Length: 115
Image 1 (spheres, rainbow, N blue to C red):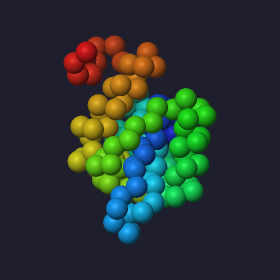
Image 2: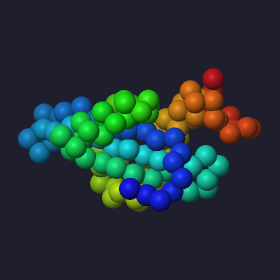
Image 3: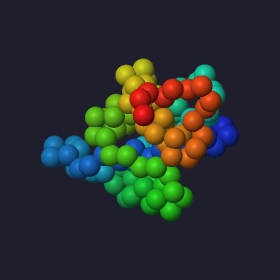
């Protein structure tokens, strides 16, 4: 895990794929500090039973969960405590904007896309 202050967290869930190597569920948890210039960070990830535990923790703590197989495929190669890659910025920004709006914490003056 990380010593960074707890910002909104997001668990990323990927549905099972048909290929034998991908027969397991993956969950990826992200953290981002509002107002930070740093990219969101992967704070946890796991497969199979560990993915189920990550998702259970997310649901138990009212953390927003989104299923996005394409984004999960990009994020699953990122090490824990590392920032997300540039390829994931647009999708993660859309998710964080939604999370911030739902939590009532969207920074003032941040359009965050369309309403």
